[in-house]
Length: 392
Image (cartoon, rainbow, N blue to C red; front, side, top):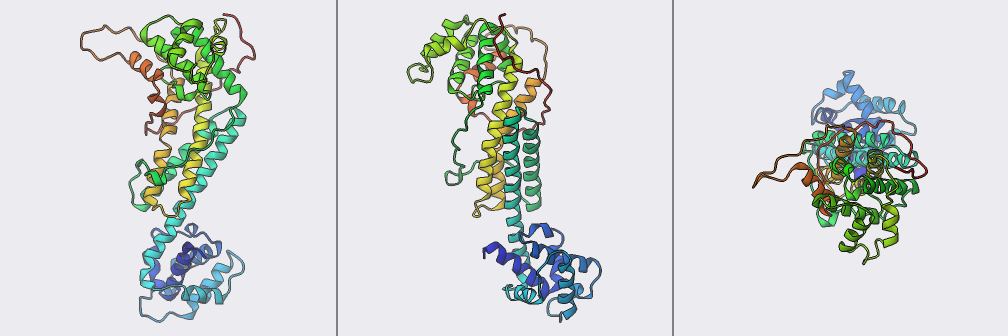
């Protein structure tokens, strides 16, 4: 048996020996915190007997415990689960080292429940992300990501810890999962977006507020978007050749990430569609991929029994940080803002927001920027992606 099962037996054995110990547990320990259904049934039966005013529940340490306490507990628990016997309840009594230590045993049970709860909701987030990948949506992923964040906050409150992100040490840092195959439609959306931006560079100004190079699944597409952001930031012309030259200067041709023919094909000047739709598709696909990876990492943390609940919650919130940032940016993608007037440059004045966004869009560091602000985002219906490139 695991230490957790021993702890559950010790809790129940202590209450069988000293029913008054329920007063120290009932405010914060609930039946669903027990991992074994039989133990949950026994504890629930004890709580009901106490609520009904059973005489034994008022006894204190050292008082004789009437046999009716054991028999009534067995009778009540048997209505909730099968296979319980009087001999098993007696084995629970023998499993308790010291009844006076029952609060410590109860905290062990609660700690195990916290690990299971985090693992359960992380699994649901992962399943939702996989379903959204197939459906091409983000609704379920956003819902379960918010649920997991709320659960972590509630668990921190119940444990008495602070719900704040904490970067795990190297020994507990989640291992990066191997990249999953990317849907061909998602890659086509990325190509259409880059073609739109090359053909109509003025659209970069709005997209750079919420679209980052790391949102692109293909490394080559990331490099092309960085090149577009750099050219836009410097105020240089944007076309197939200038993008190709900028990509070359950044070393993407030398390291094999891209080749000249592919850059010219992606930056097709015949693509003249609006970029906002494809930009939102790219961010949504990136959010779902990020959620799937984060869910796996949180589940791996929950499987580490050595982590105390406060550590588990802090590390899990840190893992969810990039996902929170993407939810914030997806909300920005859905907002419409009037075109800002060009600010008047003054010596010593800070750079305008548009230049800051452009710098972030072309920077490698922007891929790892994470904000902890939780944001709820709603997804509106979008037109379907065209299956061919239309002339401007």
